[in-house]
Length: 95
Image (cartoon, rainbow, N blue to C red):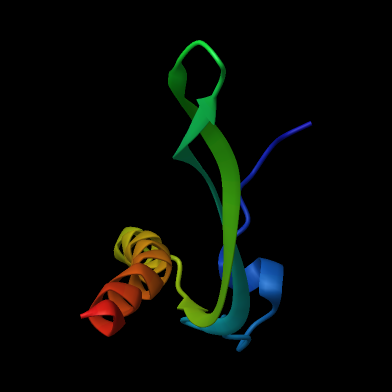
């Protein structure tokens, strides 16, 4: 048996072009922990207790995927921006 490589033209048929990018909806889930401080009062003394609470956010957006490293980095940056935008908007509305 001999092995040989197949070119993209042979695999997809002559004249078939692959798209440069494709836009599809993305659902991005972010799980994180928040520190919550609570106080308890007992007959002897007042205590402050800090615990962590698990929370999650889901953001949905449409993204154009392309088979490049720059596009992957752009996707990661977009996901970070989508999750931080709400926090910035809330701070601005509090002022």
